[in-house]
Length: 184
Length: 211
View 1 (cartoon, each protein chain N blue to C red):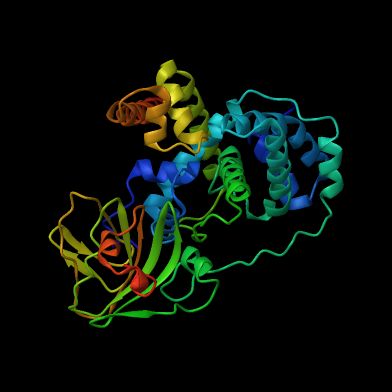
View 2: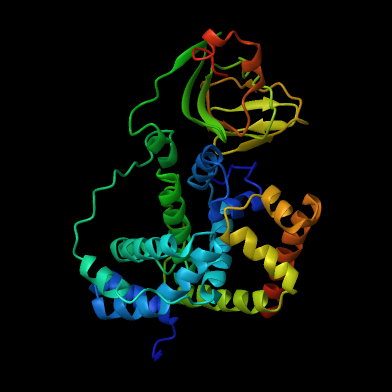
């Protein structure tokens, strides 16, 4: 994968789709993203046939809503994560999830490219921090972010008492934050 | 916006991002996120964690025609989706629930009014209208309840709640919220349990006094 810009490849593809309706970029993004999305949606509890349907729906939503992608506000994979969760739930529940209103820029800040880079840098650190987590902490974090799991359900699945699960998620997040601080 | 002092707890924002919250709670969280930059930033952080996990997910091959099928659909016209923007004191998620119409208040007595927005087996959400100086009806909590102020303010033993503030109550919270002087207090309240009061009402009357 060539990457001549400092932005992540996903961001480059998304911007090409957003600004130029670039089908070739979208096709490349599909090749990279769709199999990962499918694996992710299956981890979220969908059966393979439904997972494929959800992935197609998510990819189409990315194509149609690309105009809303703003790399100053959200890192590409974060934006796609939220679309994937929203579409998955909308398809299961057959009703639209409530989504917050768009907020304008913070007063006194001008959007510029350094914000995008800072966000991408931070996400890179986040990934490194996740990779360094203890396996059972990582599993808890994953469950909290990929499943339709309540704390109660997480507790039932792992056989851990509720308090332990909650504190482990907190511990994991706390450790993440510390790692992030250390890297900054 | 800076005046908001009572926020959504962090784990609940993560659960909202992951889609684990009941619909009624999602309405309150999405409404608060429409008003609060701090919690919006927290949402961004949780989405980033989700995105990092997504990028790390084990790839599972798509079926052979998936890509060509999708590429062929790119020019399909998208079914128009109604977009509900914030209107007046009501954030977009509330307007979505009201389908863009103004609330239809039902009187509960003593000037207190409500409009039930949503109800299913996982919980319910309603708008409450409480005149200044009036007590918020005692919707005794048998589960978790989130109350977001949209206009005016109320106070109880735990503090004062103004526009954008969220009070989180459960069985352990014994309180008597009273609307402060000034504009009538309008709140969005959601609960994940049938409200206890219901049990004491004759069945026939329940549809009229659901609180």
